[in-house]
Image 1: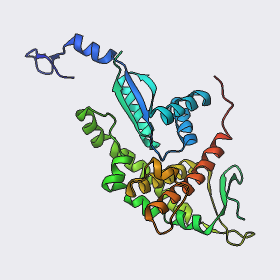
Image 2: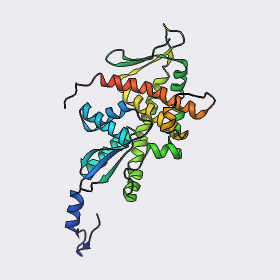
Image 3: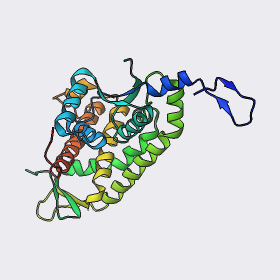
Image 4: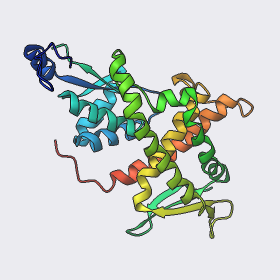
Length: 102
Length: 172
């Protein structure tokens, strides 16, 4: 977030509100990527633990990772996306976050 | 015939029994393998970037988050290393080994086993094809690494199953 102009008053800056709102409202996707080492039942367990998904949903996402190479497992605010990616990395899953295009 | 078994011994302990001599050696070698986590290949896999294209976010992540992850991984490795000092021969099954550890160490065991498997894969450049291999040449270090990844993976699989057995039924 970069200030667009300064007010001249110490400690007071104006932000480009339109850009800031757009930035905040753009959802981020959390993606889990396939790797040849992580076990299928381990990945399912991690998705259940991190997101609280029921087993059937977690298993469906795991199979998508396995067959398609990646699965979009969550969408939402950037801060929460970072939190989830952090947790997934803690379980040694290959996970990234990216801005949603929609 | 030795049957590998993972079970809750009581409310506070998990016992792994029926470990073959080979698997016991592999477990004892885990701490040494885990020390390779900071090598260039293993490091990139264990501490990956959170985005594929945003250098600013990736840089901040490596400065702020990766040290925290490293601390988490080291703590799990230390827990398992301590537990492994109790790895002994089975009283009733010659040639088999067993180890008992506190229930609250289960997550550390899963983490350390998976870290070890991922580090071995990176160090030996193991890919999907290597993991599908049915024939193993005992003279080939890459084949041996893949075999080790599979065997440690089977133990990890049993830990996950144990964890699953204590979860509520699915609700969709």
